Image (cartoon, rainbow, N blue to C red; front, side, top):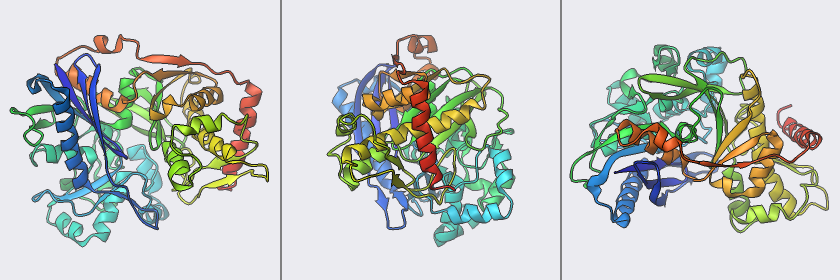
Length: 491
């Protein structure tokens, strides 16, 4: 038996086949356009994303030569906070998807903050009032796209994250649903009642009729033939936001276990247990890790806007490296950055600073600065941002984090992984596979469908270990330099 897992990420869509026991069989990747402008706005074409999803699934199944009838479930993980609004009758988007990175709704959140609503949003949703999340993006679309406002007033508008959009399209418009993890990233979910909050819905100028039904992450969300791929409809048997799926796949099922997923950005997430945590720090936010077996687990998280995107910027925009693989070799060619720091606030600083106005800088350069120093500073910036978040998470724990699970493409960069371990001063558990988001929902779907057990999947050795070698004195010196550099932006 097999599970077909869809991982719809910022850069593209992956379709991956797993055995029921969690072994990766085959994968296909299809990138989509990154639609940007001079204002720094970032959009995706939701129709292109759906079409690529179908193409990727058909391709991976076709190339695998598997008997399609042995695929028992479809699972979906998705980029979170990327907002889509569409006509519920025609299924046509009213505007491009506004990507999680996009800060165009800053004026909207500033307007609400001036009205004294930031504290209410945090208390109800666990999230800081920020254009990073979905609800302000929905508001922007309703205010700026006349067709969206008209449809909303007529109760004909649907607003959802990418998971809800894909499910709607995959089921031929029959299902409009989301899971607890995605719902908790909108700024519309009440973390205590576990329902859409009427005050938040009103604050952001949306209607409850425009929002999807919320279900547990291991539910049967609907059935799909994937545009004729399957002769008999197959259940969509798990949905989770990508970071939550990676937390699950990393085996962080108990309280105060944590992971970092390296993608375009990086999510550092901790399982906070079955009860809503008492959080005093505004540097990290509360969400729902997932809903499984009729119960939800809470999570604490800090998000970094630019991690893998730094490496892409070094390669494609300022062309200091030929490709991402080259970054490790070039960074290791010098013993240090020679005092150079890169603070990648290209679209503001995320957790724990939450400063949308900050902009990127490279500081500490001298006449002897070479491209190797800048490339190394770019990689080190990823680690420094993770350190910032772990420091905040530690304030929420009875004792400091002892181990961090890591996954994603950048885990192949040995220089970066060692620097992360050194800077944190803890062991890293490095996933042996990259596609933890896809794996997480595949594991969950397989267990929920009765194809396997949790013990069978998580009893395998899924990680290798990396230990720190840096001294405490060196660690402090590096981190003090970083905090000084950040201080130049947020005085």
